[in-house]
Amino acid sequence: MIRNKKAMLFCSQMILAGALITGAPCLASGDNGETSVFGSSDTKADDEVSDLSGEGQIHKPASLNAPDFTSDPNFVDDSTDNTYGYYTIMGTTTVSLAQMTSQYNAHGSEYPSASLKEGGAETIDDFCTIILEEANAEGVRGEVVFEQAMLETGWLQYGGDSGISQYNFAGLGTTGGGVQGVSYPDVRTGIRAQVQHLKAYACDESLNQDCVDTRFNMVQRGSAPYVEWLGQQENPNGGGWAAGANYGEKLLNLLSNLKEE
Image (cartoon, rainbow, N blue to C red):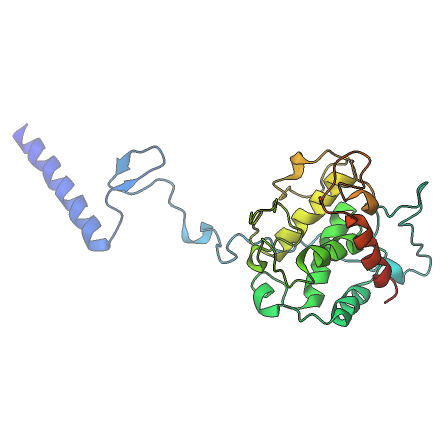
């Protein structure tokens, strides 16, 4: 019995010494709170370690694309093809990438490349391409997303409650009084959230991509299918995106100018 105890004590000492020499995690805590001299059983092999270099950023899935519908010789702008003649939010994009970037450049604001490069949009072309890809994925008109982002951020210059580092391009969660609103890990996620929020207002269809809009379920689905109804004061259903007067009209003016580019 004494010999057995001595043998067990010797083995334990050898294991502990080996752990200290090799630098192995001698007493690592596992998920269940227990400890082990061999470390956690959940430790991954080198080839299984997650790549964290993106820091949570959403990268463009191969399935996303930004088609130029206007290049089709049979293209018809159906944005106001409805009983009211109002501008519908859902549908194909009726402008080209070149029109969007041209309007931005003509406005005269310097594109904040230094601030948005880290988020995946170094140029205005990059920014607008992401808009077209994300809008197309959900069937939302890209020009509506673009003009709303320009209106909400002052042509990406900000100055309101939210800051450019939040990648929040539509004032999501900025309820006034200094409330900064929602922050996103990159440009694409911020635009995707905006697209999904617009879709929530515009229709009752399900999302085609994973939901990143944390405020999606706060919306009365289908309560604002038209740009004209995005302003709460002009919405016959009493809801809407923004509380300020003539919100939809401001967007329409921008859209009209865009289509002249």
